[in-house]
Length: 477
Image 1 (spheres, rainbow, N blue to C red):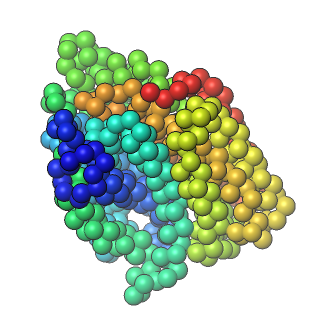
Image 2: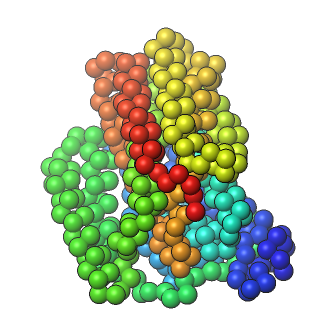
Image 3: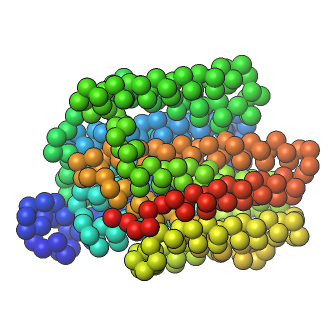
């Protein structure tokens, strides 16, 4: 078949025999990419209802979010390596099936701690599935098709983060068949079943031509490094900052240094480490990762804080709190779809423009909060949310393309895992840092001033990302 074939068979191949990802296959892997990101954010507006129904403390509710995020982040690079080793289609199908089973377990959880355990397992399933999406795109597309697929992936990722919060509010309020908050997890089951059928028919199998065994010491040390950083930051405030949180944070730099030493030693001996240090010799990957950290911290922190503020402070229901961000989702989708044309014409400087536009949007949101609190809703937040969404759309999809642009197909799984791990860790840090700032300030200065202060801090992060964007390569390979 030709590369432009859209036949839904699993073994679409180019004339040279290499696998090619058709239109239906691309839709399927993007569906798989959307599910984990939606589920990271979908619980934000459902947490109050979960707390009341399961009599869960604030610390346990934090674990419902953090348990998913930490297990997801810790296992992502391993998921990418396993895809390179055993086949990305196989890992995608297995991860998606596990995601459906763990989603069902979340939806049926009888207690808060059962829900926490199911969320940790759900994060692990996501880590098996998501790296295969980008690795498959890198290995089974080329040229303009790859540019378009990467732009669609970036659009899917950004839209999923906003849509997850909106969908969560709608499902909780709809109370389908009396399921209440449980529907935010149960809705995944039919979607997964559809995805499995489509993936079996349309996603080609790809793997590294020279797969390496799993780097066990590197995997363990990366896990220890991320856990010692993310666990205390996400749980510390709700738990009252006990001794273990400070000991864990103190251990982080030592664990990270040990991880780097082990990976560098493996690289020098000719083995393939979990995260090859030579990857960071690529300027596009290195500079893109540095920029995606503050961007993701601000994105997830904003989403968490606005959900809490609108429900607890402005007394909005879950639907109204979710729909308040609908303008952001609409402009993100519209602008991100024009990304390939803008990059072709103006290069990566549109990322800098995106940072400036996002800054204007967040400033407008802060002004609306200052003037209208507590009477906030879609109308008051619409200008700022719409502008901020457009600015984010000019950054995130392009950053994904930049980071992966110089990675050869044989390392697609590893490169994808590194990028998504960095993004996911930063998303968890955003909830931990900006969320902690907001919740710590609110009792003393009130919800309005706490929210405005948090938005001003986010503006500082946007300034950082905008300045960092000036160091990005001018063009994308």
